[in-house]
Amino acid sequence: APAAPLAPAARGPALRAPRPYGYSRGHPEDHCTGGESLGAPRAEVYECDGYRPNVGICLVNAAGLVFAARRVDDPSASWQMPQGGIDAGEDPGRALFRELEEETGLGMGSVEVMAEASGWLTYDFPTTVVGQRSGVPIRYRGQRQKWFLCRLTGDEGAIDLDAALTREFSEWRWMPLDALPAGVVAFKRHVYAAVAEEFLPLIPRAAR
Image (tube, rainbow, N blue to C red; front, side, top):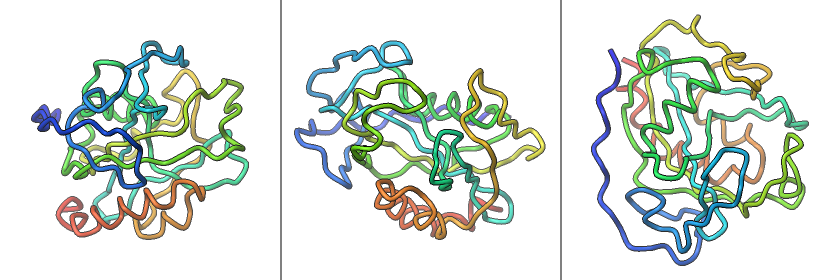
């Protein structure tokens, strides 16, 4: 059955400066200084101090392993978990289901949300990424992410990397969460370490 709607988070104080572990409850638009649309590839995306609001998805199977994939445009062949931008006015909980379906083909009926990270995590794009990615100019300093721990409740055979109009991943596998900080690109490692620290104790419950 589809996951129950997420309860709205409490609103917190505005974030005036990005922090590597920039925790702040609520919708990212609550913490933006401008909310200006930058004309990014997805319509009406807004920024927070130059950081694009984003969701990250830690998807766990019954064995307690996490979905990881390689981006088609990443020459380093690193492994990462699904993630994607939050549209202007979109709730992070809705964004996670939209992004998960776009990137993996899994719909709401195939996953259950088990936990939400206690705050927002921020990373900067390195100079090698800021110029362009996938042929599209990047106009953000980095991304500010809200992470969710989800459990796969459906058949993994439903995973389809070709579900999106533009395929984002070349391949996927199940991996231990504590192995991912070493496998992701360097500029995301502090975020993955924080995600692992918060979600690892919850994985036994999520994998049941």
